[in-house]
Length: 409
View 1 (cartoon, rainbow, N blue to C red):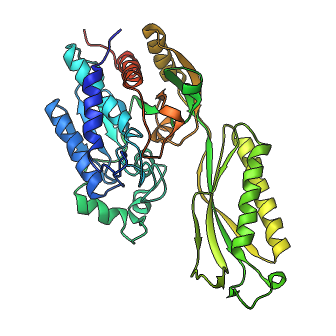
View 2 (cartoon, one colour; view 1 turned 30 degrees about the vertical axis):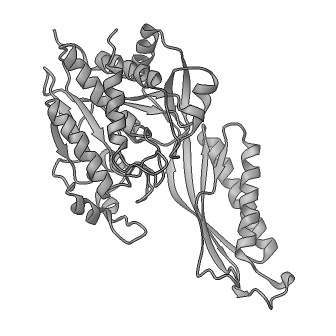
View 3 (cartoon, helix red, strand yellow; view 1 turned 120 degrees about the vertical axis):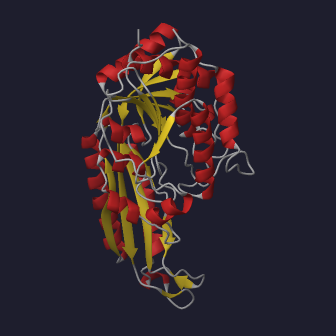
């Protein structure tokens, strides 16, 4: 079985981490920012040095291609993203991109040519931290999101995706989509399961269902010093009770059911005014669509009951849905065969996070490789991984991709 150059990959990861480095050891490369541009340019420099051909599509997805002997064949694709959370880690997303580059560098080292072409994809705005929805670039590529709608998405400053792409020079001309033989994505787990079970590799069988909701709570703004407590219609106190109910709801669907409120904003907030209007987000997740349906039904039922009790109005609207997605059995088998042959400790696992691979799995045969992250911590500047796990995960990626692409004779 082939193995990659671990120190070279680690050095690449550390060099990319300097782009948008934060004071506390993390990374900040918001999608289509100057830092994201710099990260893309560093990656492009490495790809050019490796003899790869670069192209960019209209939503800014960046592709690096290595020719195969059957050049008309659809490519075997690897990839992930370079954008981060505002206070993100050094490995989320970037590991999958640079693992793909290391696969190609290692094939060059061994003098191996594949039959099918290979491509590395850098997907635009995977995180959803600057523009929504998350996984925007892969959604456009796979046809899950219309290009014009994606380009019209704006950040908190009112800057659109189209404007941001033009500002950094990544409004490309490559046609969106196209045939893909298979897609493989290496990623940190972003959770504690592999580390807790002392496993080096997660053979990912699919992604769990995700549902985002937007909640609007309307009460009545009033003076904080003159309005008796029994007469108040306080939107924030009502929302606090709703959020507590959401936390309790997760216990009813444990252990797979998860609920999160990640955003909350009070309209026209003032220190001495009772909040009359606010919005908050709800993130629901479960391995099974049917259970997620039941969770959403309970959200509507319980939040409406709390609103009625407090004399408030509540509106709950869908924001984004990602159904539970199984990965391709043959691609998963390629990953499984690689890890078995390499003899690395492993287990099968369902992805708890959303990934570009989820969109790709509905478009072409897809699989993922997970490696542990220290303490299960991600979306945090303290996010960390072990170099040995990085190397082993990329060894698995290399051999799985080679099995799918075929070695030229």
